[in-house]
Length: 159
Image (cartoon, rainbow, N blue to C red; front, side, top):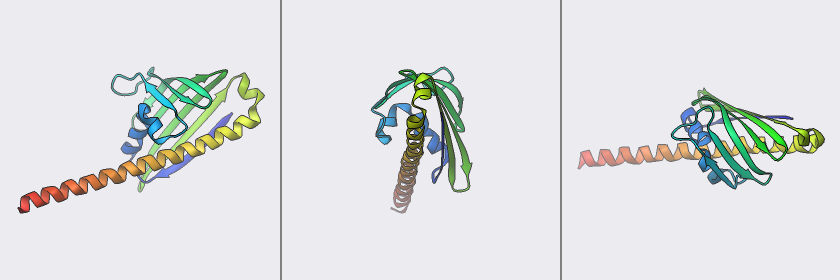
């Protein structure tokens, strides 16, 4: 089973990367994630392990590719399913273009292909929209904070 989704986000690539790569904070912007724990020392790297819980169960994951802030991939296991997820982030004139692909394998995916295929696509479509909302909100917050700091600095030099 393969599902693909894409979205254009009105936020800088670095901001989108920060949201995606901060695995521990996924539950704050993705209501489908009950908890997430990443075992990275400082930054994500190949071999980093993490896990997160959804209604399907707890997925145990291992990072297989990192090219910050351009690409992130991992493989995961939950029950009798294997999953590979690959993200690509490309800067655009108006922000960032994001693409994600998820591939599920294993006996469960073959038996329940039709039901799981449509569900996986809905999950991926929702996921990129949730990422867009969070990254755009953070970008707006950063711009507002920068504007307040600039106004404060200007007021300090005028007074």
